[in-house]
Amino acid sequence: MHTSPDALASRLLRLPPSCGPVRLVGVDGHAGSGKTTFAGRLAEALSGAPVLHLDDIATHEELFAWAGRLLRDVVEPLSRGDQAHYRAYDWQARRFGPVRALPPAPVVLVEGVGAGRRALRPFLACLLWMELAAEDAWARGRQRDGSEQRDFWAGWVIAECRHFTEDPSRPYADLLVRGFSEGFEVLPGPAGTAGPDQVVTHRDGPSPVC
Image (tube, rainbow, N blue to C red):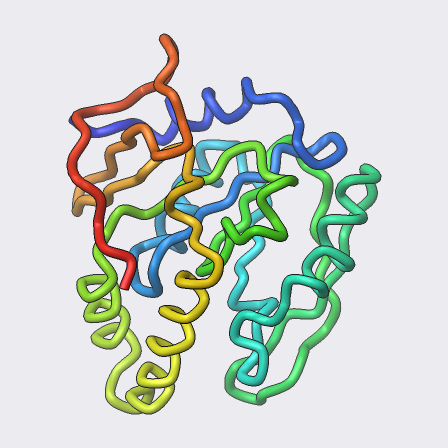
């Protein structure tokens, strides 16, 4: 049973704001698990909701040490109802690019590894976890990025495992998302309780973290 993006979008819009006037929604999961694709589909169902990609916040030197910058540049302005501004990191040039604006829309999606981290969870209206085992997600990511990124992936896997060991996201997920070629299904997460209006399907066992 697949869940329509419109049904999930409707559910998210009924949540109370969590960061000033904004419903901040995290989309977390292992690298290669389909977060960007899913967030894009969900943003369309939300009438073009802004999406903040954490790949724009992280850097080669700070794969996960970006929480302070995210809180200062994005979360704090949104919590005041102001437009946020941040510089997106250019992974090819290894430097930050021009300033980008992020408006305080009714729903703002934050997608990327670590979107459900401890520092950000107090500001999230909902945390979604892409339910794909680590090894399967990494295999997809390596295939996507090609052989030229082999060395980066070797270091990334170590850093991601360390991050999720110290600051896990999946136990705090309100909903689990499993992707398919023709759509996705949404299941209740470890931290969520399926209410009468929650669109879910059957529950399977958890995927390993690392």
